[in-house]
Image (cartoon, rainbow, N blue to C red; front, side, top):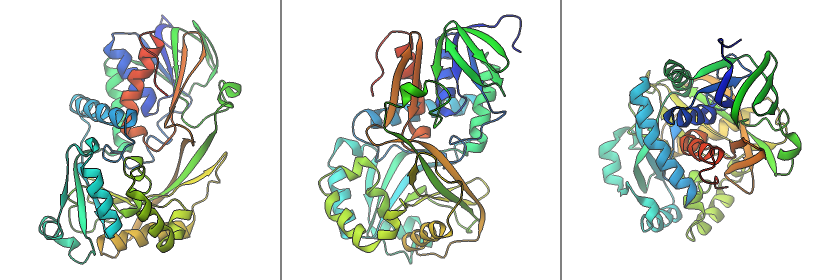
Amino acid sequence: MPGKTQSYDLAVVGAGILGLATALAALRRKLKVVVIDRDAQANGASVRNFGLVTVCGQERGAMLQRARRSREVWCEVAAAAGIRLLQRGLWMCVRRLESLTLLEQFMATEMAEGCRLLSSTEIRRRAPFLGRAPLLAVLESDQELRVESREAIPQLSAWLESRGVVFERGRAVLGIDPPVVSTSRGELRAERVALCPGDDFTTLYAERLARYPLSRCKLQMLRLAAPGFVLPSAIMSDLGLGRYRGFADLAAAGPLKARLAREQPRHLEHGVHLIVVQSADGTLVVGDSHHYATTPDPFGQRLVDELILEEFSATLGLEPPPALERWIGTYAAAADRAVLFDAPAAHVRLATVTTGAGASTAFAVGEELLSDLLGETAAAA
């Protein structure tokens, strides 16, 4: 049970990255905050990812602004909480003329802040290990950050706790009727409640959430042995240009999408695109894939791993190092929005990021969620 007083200004339900971001926003307002989570430790999408704060390529408008704001907060929090920023920047490596045409169009937009195109000569100078890679160009962005999620999320939680946020773990929320929050271990009192359920659409406000076209996305990822060199930044490939809407929504994306459909239909069928990031020990985190279902099966497919590693080899011109770990993640998905905001009851607000951009946008989304809950402004859908 909590301490002598069980009354709070805000209860945050869910201790994933969005719940922690909302707690941080409330802490900065000097609110008394409790975070409630049914698990003993972070175990979901917030730790089963690349830890990559992706700015370049986010959808034009609100999502891009959220990513830029979240990057700012990540820098602030990392310095305060002792979270290591392992990598900075992004190299979007392309090997098709259609991709280069698309990148040139992208560079003419306001979305290209902090970006520049590298020639093949500069690529070889900066990353000689890519000498055999058939790259036409690289879009270099200086906007990205990378943390080790399985370390950073617990560190962020511990720092918030040291600043006065109360954590109630191993405690499921069964009902919300402010100021009463009913849990599996008794009641708490909170004037307002921020619900950050991730991809749990059935425990709380199931009828309300059923109004939205929600599903879950399953992804596969691998950790590869250290290759013996240091990456210049996070790496992506042509396939990412078809998935990230900042690129994919541009007119020049059409010819590239058509070519990818002809040349890599199996990759597209399994939602494979390439992200490669490097950990402090030199190992590489590589992925990923996208399969959508109401309840995805929990099994990884060998074919999907092979497709991911095939794209690794095609992009870097290298044989992939041995796989040390494999895992599956899931996150909330929706075809009609990138972030779901809802007001299921008075003094209760709900939010979940319905793309794979939780780490990239959560701090901004948490600020929006809290502002709406305090009646300052309505959160944007």
